[in-house]
Image 1 (tube, rainbow, N blue to C red):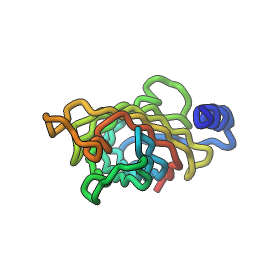
Image 2 (tube, rainbow, N blue to C red; image 1 turned 90 degrees about the vertical axis):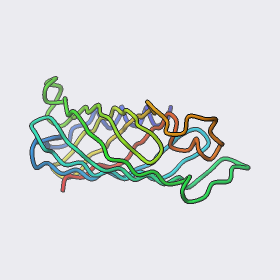
Image 3 (cartoon, helix red, strand yellow; image 1 turned 135 degrees about the horizontal axis):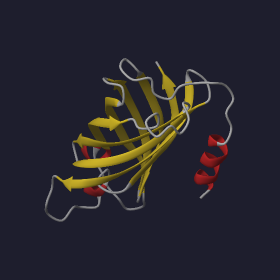
Length: 163
């Protein structure tokens, strides 16, 4: 709940004019906290614009903290994905500093969907938040507790940078 309040407070303040997504050639790097049931970690994304409202990107996530009595090796803790985003903030005419981007991703653990938002306070710095869910898990059997990492509802929040 504290994270939601912080996000709302930060989104309500606009310091200078910035553009959240500029289309073809746009480059974004984001780094932040990854939170999911029984695990927290670090999340990094890189997105590049290939069209007026389309971007492709890469995601890397590593689970640092696990709940008690959960054993996980490196392969269980890491997830790497490629993703597609439909950047619709401009289409919806929300605010040029704000971008809303639903998308799909293909990773080591599953095929999933996500929706994210980012707000830029200056031409180079902003904040982002994303939620993601698996659509199809690659292991159709019962998952071990370690295999559920990155294979469930996730929440990411952090800093976004224009490159």
